[in-house]
Image 1 (cartoon, helix red, strand yellow):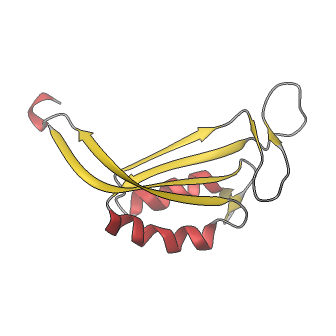
Image 2: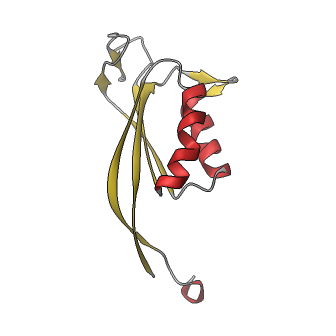
Image 3: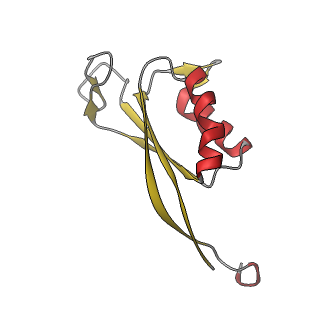
Length: 114
């Protein structure tokens, strides 16, 4: 089954060490997106980067820091993203939230073929 829709993509950038109520921030955001029935959320762990704090974040075997850059990519309709953005505003203490308009195509298996 194929569904096309215009929507928004949100990309959230922060560090792996960032937390929300005792959990890793990325896990807390994914859980909140699940509660809101957001269409798609993917977490990416980067190799190296820096952001608003100008601190270089690295991952790897040879560094003592385990504060790798994290990016979440979130896609849904304008209405769903509008519900999510204020929540992200309370959860992200240091980082970047960027939005853009997207044309999305969602593919799903039909229930008969599952």
